[in-house]
Length: 337
Image (cartoon, rainbow, N blue to C red):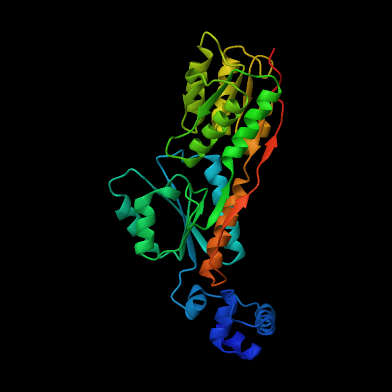
C-alpha cells in the first residue's frame, strides 16, 4: 500500500501542509520539526507525488534554461552550463527543461510566452547572449517570472553568476607577451556576446599596455565554432607577415586554428603558439594540449541556478556571484622561434 503524505504527517505529529513545506525545503519550518518529518519519511520510505509537493502553493517545481539557437547548439560551453543547472535542480528536487529561442526570430515573444504558458516554470536561467536581450527581459518582468543570468553584460539588478573575462583575456595575452611574442592575433567570437567584447577588450588592453600598436589584419571575426576557427586561421596564415601566436576567444576556435596549422605543416608551438578560452574537456585532449583560460562553466551554471532557487524557495533576493578564473599553461604556447 502506498504511503501518503497524510500518513507521514500523522507519524510526525504535524499537519500535511508542514510536511509539504519540508518537502519544498521552505524556510518557515523549525529545525526540530524538519528533522522529525524527515525521519518519518525515511522510516516509511515515502516517495512524494508532485501534487503533494504543490500543496503549499501553486508551483511547478520546474526551472527552464533558455539559450539562443542562432548560437552554436552543440557548444560544449552550453552543455556544461546545462549540467550545472541540472545538478542544482536535482539537489533541491526541482525538474529542469531546456528550450532554444531564436533571438532574432520574429516570433521570439510568442515562443517565450508558449514556454511560460505551456510549462509554467517557476523560474528561468538565461545563457549568453539572451541574458541581455531587452525584449526577453521586458517580457519576463511583465509576466513576473523570476530569472537568473549567466555572464550578463549589465551587472545592475541581476542575479546569477559572472566572471571578469576582460581581465582573464588580458592575463592570457600577457602570458604570450612574457614568452616574447609581439605579433599576436586574436580570433573574436559572435558580436552579440558580451564574452566577445570582453575578450577582445582584454586583448587590446594587454597589447596597448605593452606599447604595441594594433594591426587590424590580426583581429579576425569568428563565431565560437570550430569551422570559424578554421576560416580565421586560413586568413591569418595567408598574411605576408604571419602572427607568431593566435589567441582564440574560445577553445573550439582554437582547435580549428591548430587544425589549419597541422594542415599547413606548421608545428605547434614551434612555428605558431595557439591558446584559447574556457578549458573545455577537449583542451586537455588535443595534441599538444591547449593553453587556455579556465572558465568554470559547469560551476557557473550551478551557481546561477542556486541563486534562482534562493528566490524561489523564499530564502533571499539572490545575488550576482563573481567566479574566479585561472590561466592553464600547457604545451601549445612557447617562445617564438
